[in-house]
Length: 110
Length: 114
Image (cartoon, rainbow over all chains, first blue to last red; front, side, top):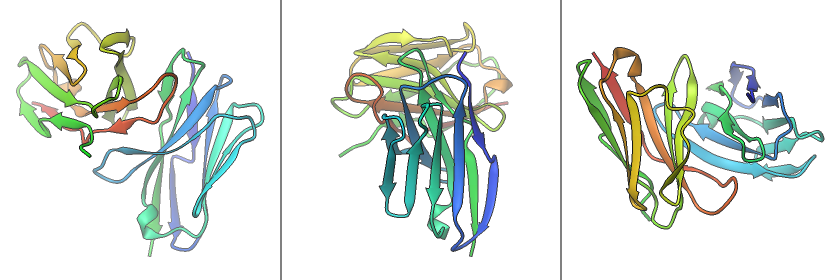
């Protein structure tokens, strides 16, 4: 079945540093979604990417979908303590199944 | 607007007991999802419904788990009999529309089986 990997598993950064997490799939995806889960909270939808090579920005967050639609990245510029949490990608394989990646846990040191 | 509502928020029970988790999706949403989250296995999709009909239950671990959606505003996930390895946070999520859509998650039920 489809597998979705995320790297790194954990990332510790100093406040103000940049952060990137990568999501990789074993199969071509129809779309990919990104979610953020704060400690003790629930996943919250951030964005959905559909087109090959698509790039979307939300303030300090930049999301990218790979040209082959098998990978995606989330980049945070100048991290803040409010960025702490686990970032999940969720991949849809043309309706066959919907799989969450294992997540990247981000810690931001003040 | 009310989000996805789950109950109870916490449940502690002894193994062998029946556990029922409840979910009220956002009004107007036509898809409902049940997830289980653990440190070891991450966020796993157990089952999802579309227009109250179960579409994919391949993630349901075994026959001890069952889910129902009797109407558009209510769903249950039942575990009978419960086992310690069922301890996890169970999330319900809902979405609107066809195809992959943003999912709105409830606050989850933290289940501990002793």
